[in-house]
Length: 361
Ligand code: ADP
Ligand code: MG
Image 1 (tube, helix red, strand yellow):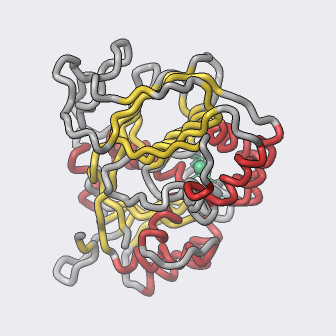
Image 2 (cartoon, helix red, strand yellow; image 1 turned 180 degrees about the horizontal axis):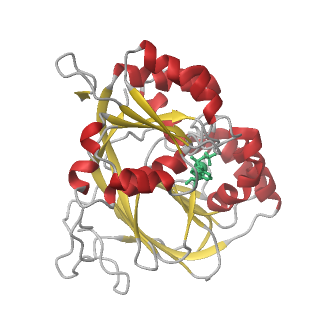
């Protein structure tokens, strides 16, 4: 743990990034009614930046003079932080830039990281403005901890950095289909889930992973994809078979594949209760075909309290892994990273422990 606002060195300030379109479009109202006062009362100098379009925040942090800022604070959903993380990683000085403390305040409809950060304090769950207050309190305390990033290689060869999740199948479909209901806030995921259940389908693909308990290092026979920044030493090139110490999942028919890097999938879905910001783990869940609608609904309801693994459902598999490869067998489909749609196709991912920094408990 580091301390953000020390007595010794006065802060230069916090860059506050707000997406006015996130959630119900209420982020600016939340800033005016809560956040600005909170920062002022805590004596934290801050400058407001309101995004005007998608990727505006990404461009801003890519070119910002980061020596001016003690922290970047995001008041939005997870999507805006995804832009910020990737903007930082695109910089020439990425190694230093990604060390800039990041803070999250829930202002969107998908506030999974904010809910996770609150969960890590071990306090009982809260929602809406109470979650904002809790995250604001953590921000004013200014404790900084490490944050894992997961490097995700998409089929085009593009690479993105993720702090939250990789989803395919049911969860990815719900994520994207429920965007039309962002007016109802976090409830959009529950409504989307119910609608998707009505048209439940099976997704064909191949899944392989490196179990976390695997002691062996990277396979020396295969050379990882070349990178100057954060090399993915656990991955073999996509054209080659996975390294020998990986596990190949026999099933080829899935209802969902969900890789979680934090505890919460959304404000009210506690998908990976044991996950921590810097545990160096990918919490991999998959649900195989053959599950009934009723059982799947029961799983999602149990997930609200994080008890889905206690349901005794044989179609649900949970593994702690460090890397994975997922190859959908059909061309069309939806894949999301941190709730944002990415190109659909074969992907590989590997966790990089604690490379970013998060204002947290
Ligand atoms: P929500 O949780 O409501 O989805 P996000 O923060 O995830 O909120 O933002 C949703 C999307 O809006 C993201 O893809 C983000 O990049 C994009 N975005 C950011 N700023 C703007 C803006 N000013 N206008 C439109 N879209 C934006
Ligand atoms: Mg979002």
